[in-house]
Amino acid sequence: MANRAIITKIIISICVVFSCFYYVYAQFLMEDYKKTEIKPKPGLPTYIARNIRAEVINEVEGAVKITFSVDPDAKNDFLVGRTTQLPSSAEVALQASTVKVVLAGAETVAIDSNLPPGQYYYVVLARDKILEKDISLYPDVNYTSAPIVIKKKIPEVPQKRLPEQITLLYARVVNKTQVLLTWKGVQQPNIIYNVYRAAEPLNSPERIKNAKLIGQVQADNESFIDRTITQSGKYYYAVTVRDIEGNEDIQLIPDQSYTANPVSVIIRRDVFVTNIRADIDEGTLKITWNKPDVDVRSFVVYRHTQPIVDAQTLALAVKVATVESNKLEYVDKKPVPGTHYFAVLAILEDGSIDTTLKPDSNYTTKPVVIGAPIRLKLIEASEHNGLVKISWSYTGSSGSRYFKLFRSSTAPSTSQDINNAFLVDVVNVTANEYTDSDIPAGTYYYTLVPETYDIDPEFKIIKGINSTAEPVKVTRQVAAKVTPVLPEKEEIKKPEALPEKEEPREEVKKEKPQQTFLPTPHVNRIIAATFYKGKYESCIDALTAFVQNANKPEEIAKANLFIGRSYIELKQYPMALKYIMKSDVAKYYPKEAKFWRDFALSRVQ
Image (cartoon, rainbow, N blue to C red; front, side):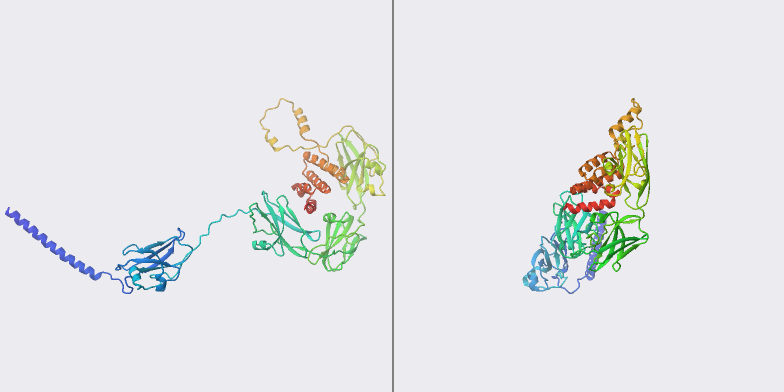
C-alpha cells in the first residue's frame, strides 16, 4: 500500500510540472503573436468606409448592387445613401436618401431596387458621424464619383412581316407626255400597289418617304399610266406593295421595284423631219429628208413592208440605221430586196424620240421596189390517197411573200370567182408547195394569188401559172394525220404487265382516238377566214375550239395571239391581256406579244 501511494504522488508531481511548462509556453506564444500581429495602416480614420463600388444588376430592372469595406477595428454602424447629384460636399451627402443601414460587423452589401430611369450616386457614412454632422468625403473611397445610369427599358416590338416586293418594273414614255409603268406583281391577297415618282432615284427609305405618291393600283392590275406630268424633266419611279395592315417594304431593289435609270418627258410641240424621199438608182437606195427647226441628237431610219402610219406599224418596223444630226441622208449600196416603205424619226437632245408620223413628211407613202417583184411561173396539183399536193415555182424577190390559196369546184376566171371560192390557207410562197387535207369528195381547181389581188387593177388569172390548168379528183375525204398527246395520268394507269384484252386490238385502236382526239384545221386557215375578214367573235370561237384539240405548241401560241388581237379589236382589253401575256405567245412571238401587250395595257386604265 505504501508503494502504491508513493507512485501516485510521483505521477501527480510529474503532471503538475508538465502543466506549468505548457502554461509558460502558451504565454510565450501569445506575447510573440501580439508582437507580429498586422496593424492597419495609419491614414484614414476607422469610421470611414472604404472601396465603395456600385453596379447595375442586369437581370433585374432598376436594381443596383453597392459594396464597400470597413476598418477591422471599426465599431460603427454605416448608412448607405443615394443621391442624384455628385455627393462631393457635406451638404449633398447629408441629403442623400437612405438605402440601407449596415450594422457593425454585418456584411457590407446593399441592394437598391425599383429605381426609375435616371442617374444615381452612392455614399457610405458612419451613423454617429452623421448625427454629429462630422463627415469626411473621399471620391471612389466612401462615395462614387461616376454615376450609375438606369436606362428606360424599351419593350420589344415584334418585327413586322413585310409584304413581298414586285419585280421587273419597267417605265417608258407613251403619248409623248405620259409614262407607262408595267411590273410583275405578287401573289398575295388584300394588297395594293403604291406608285411613287421623284426627280432622283428612289433607292432609300428616306427618298421613298419624300417622294410623291401618284397612284394606287389594285392587286389584280400590273400597270399604271402617269398622266400627271406637267413639266419637262427626267423622272424616276418606284412601286411598293402595301398589305391590309398597312405594312410596306420601302427598302427597294434597282430595276426590280424602282427604276435605276430615268425616263425623259418633253412637254413641247412636235419635232419631226420633213420632205422624206426614198429612191433607188442602179441598185443603190438613197433616203433624204429636211432637218426640223430645233436641235436634235440624231435620226433613226425604219423600214417596213407597209406604210409606217402609226405606233403599231412602227413597232413592227425594222430599225435600219442611226444617222448623225449633221447628215440628212442615208445611203445603202446593198439594200434588202423587196417592196419597202421608210420612216425617219428624230432623237431629241435629251435622248427621247418624237414618234409623230406625218405622210410624205417623215414617212413614205409610195413603195420602193428593190429587185424584181415576186411572180408565179407554174402551179400544179396532184391527188394521193385523199390528200392534194399543190406545188408551184416563182421568180423575183420583192413584194409580200404571203399568198392566198383558194379551192373551187369550177375553174375561176375573175376576181369575183376567187371571192366565192374556199380559202384553204395563207401560205409563204417561198415554201413552193402545200398539202391540202380534209377535202370533201369532188373535183377541184386550186388558185394561188397575192393577198392584195382584189385591189390590184392588173391582176389576171392565168391557167397553169397561178391557177391549175387541170382539176384534181378527190374520191374520199381524208384528214391530216394528227399525233395525239395523251394525258400523263392515262399513261401512268397503263401497267406494263396487263394481260391481253379480250377485245380485238384493231377495235380499240379505232374507237379511242376517234372519241378523244379530233383532227384540227390549220390555224392560218381559221385566221384568214375570220380575223382578216373582220369576223372577230367568230375568230375567238373558232380558235378557242382549235386550241382544245391542237397539239403543236407554235400553232397554239399563234391561236392565243390572235384570240388576244380579236379581243383588242372588240375593245375588250382585259380579256385580250389574258391571252397575249401567255408564256407560249411570248416564246414564239416575242415582238408581237410585247407590242400588243403594251397596246392593250395603255387602254386598260
